[in-house]
Amino acid sequence: MIRSRVFFVIGFLFLLVILFTYTFVDFRERDDKAYDLYQSGSYFKVLKLYKESEIPTSELELTILSQSLSQLEKQINGKDNQKELLQFFQKRNDTKLLEWDTTRGTYYHIEDPYFSHLKKHGTGYKRALITKINSIIKPIPKAEVTHFLLLLILEDPRGMEESFSDALSHLLTFPFEPIGEIETGFLLQTLHFLSQISGTNLYHQTSTIRGKNVNLRSGPGRENSEVGKVSEPEPTICLEEDGAEETIAGNEGHWKRCYFPNTQKTAWVFSGFLKETLADETLTSEFEKRFKAVDNEIRIDFEGWDGKKIPQTFFGNYIPRESIRVYGETGFPIYGSDTKNPSSQRICKKLSGNKNYFEFSFMPTDSENPIPFIEIHVQYNHLEHLAYSISLDQTSIWVNKNRYVLDGAKRRENLSLHIENRQGDKWNASLWRRNTGLIQSIRSYPLSEAMLEAGKYSWEICLPLATKPSRDHVLLFEVRTGIH
Image (cartoon, rainbow, N blue to C red):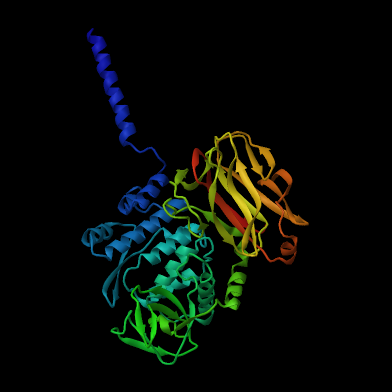
């Protein structure tokens, strides 16, 4: 009797230990923990996941650590918890705290040991750089602004146009040292390219001055000091707009902060003295040539997307959904439709330049019914025309009406659609897994032969979004496209 009670107590305690462990111990991979902590704003806790002086090998972890330091630098230079943060970094061995003298007092800069280990020109590197720039909340030395500006304009913004545009606009609001002729050309190429991209803050913001001796001011309003004068047809690119309406010299408008490339300075000007112009085709053409070598490395992923807003660089009728993390990466769930109501919306991303392959990375579905998860469109005459629709069910992948039976393993897949040649009004393509052809001679839906012949078309990637979703979904991690 006593023995049975002892065993009962031991068993009960063992059960409590198991329940406690599963309730309070986080068994996830470290990069998943770091990602969730960063998204929740727990930047201190991100650092505490790693030993001092430890440099991870994962690009994702390096990016999150670099971004966390940038966010903490922003907090140090704000008003909250400054003393506590300063004490923490003064004691931390693997980071160096620098003090920069500025026009608005001391700026505290944290030297970042992780940023230099990121792959140059890679997605993580760009994200970390953009976060550093957006974390600057008061003036820093001109030389440091110039350093960040030169780093930024050497990067290809395609794939993250919105965040890149925000960072560049933010950086240009600070004074910087004059840059060379070549670098100025790169900057103008990038500004004019971004001014053509809908959804960016630079969209349709190229202008010229209208009038003579137009005043430039240090802030939005005539009460602010004059910092110069310009006359037509001085070119400018506007970075932000003050919301208040005003009437000056019979013109209604807003004050805009604009960058003037001829003087390499930024100032506020009244919009009534601006005339909107089109982006310079020569500059945008030079931009395309400059990054032509990386055209076949265009990559669309969902890192940084939180589910509430449409993924960056996409447009269309977005239906919010929760992002899903698997193996340290963010997946975009594309749900099947309710069989009683199969209607759907879609979001799309425009692609520039020629394309002849589309590689997509996804997690298979358990759905018995095919779920369309990628559409490849050809755009001409200002309309999108469906060329290929790619769907998945629990056993197969479908490209238009062509089917390939998968092996049934529930693992991440990487497949690619190669556009091979054109026959009349249809493209001919094939489906591949690495170097193995899975389906040959996949005909596109009919398109305009005249437009294809003349080359007057462009490609788009679209993601279908069920209006009334079922529980089944395909998880899309990334899409790569270019020329092979």
